[in-house]
Image (tube, rainbow, N blue to C red; front, side, top):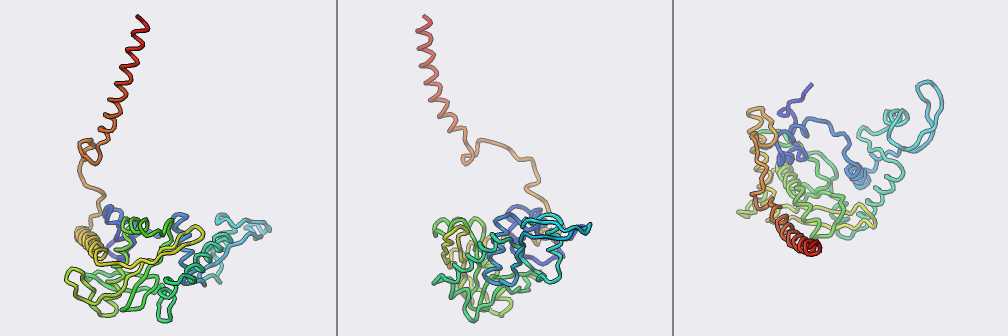
Length: 304
């Protein structure tokens, strides 16, 4: 049965897909998450190890009883009958994050690095900090759901990202490209709704400003971390993105139409300067033509 996108709460992970198309949003909003890529699964494990270690459940090699009653050995790969039996055990947490020994070691190493970080640790693990608690809120009457990694209501919000590089210039570029700043601003709106404050508007400098942090930690050893704080320019950029996506969402919901890209025949052209690779080919061809001509002259003289 197809789920109507209009009946589900808006999550940022789905809303940002409006940057691609309404069809991408509808798919993200209504399809259950399938576990994601290896990098996403490792990120989920790192989050659990950092904020909710009780959710981590290790799947180890051993023996199991198959459907025919025979005792068989199995590996720690998450496939096959042994894996399905293990997942179904009633003692596991409802939101368990299953890992093997290597993945568990990796996730706990990231958590340890964060606990040892002189800047990240006080922000993430202070006495008043709330971890992974859902906020149910509304925008323009539309129900939304947000789950910041860590926050102090009305004071600060933070999000943890595992990444290839936490080098400041590199991560800033990657974060803006993947809308991490917009995700924090979306959480900001959620916190404002819950606490009753007015979100800060950087254009007018009015409202109640709270700190918005993105904590980046490299997924590879030695798990170097950097803490970033959003400035006014990042918030303005985030507002522009969220506002654009939100208007698209309301329009699509009004018509119950979830199209893909532009509904027209597009030109595949080299006239666009940004896509014009012909100039490069032309330069190459000119050089090649000169070389070819000189070679031809040499060949002709030899033939003569």
